Amino acid sequence: MASLDDVVTVQKNGVIAINNLAQTNNRMLGTTTTSVITASTLVISGAGYLVRYSILVAGVSGTINNANSVANSASSNALCATQATVGIFNVGMPFASGLVVNPGAGQSVAVTYSIG
Image (tube, rainbow, N blue to C red):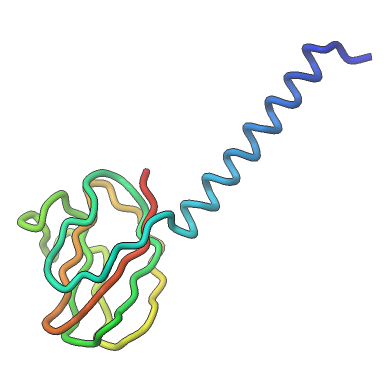
């Protein structure tokens, strides 16, 4: 027969596994969506996961960058170019430095991401 310690250990391992699944699920679905962005904006500093972006008002194509400031965003650290048409676009890219959104002229963008 299993001891009480064995039963508690099994329970603890179950809780850890469920927690890990929940964290993975949150990362893939995104935990935060920005408000509408119409000018170059630092969304967050640090590491995370860009889930998707939405073009709410069409305009010239812009970029979403892995950078820790608007000044540091460049073509060399672009995660993706934003579409010039209205829609929701899945990305699924990790970023390490931060998330900078540079909408194109006339464009309105919202991004969904997870931290960490």
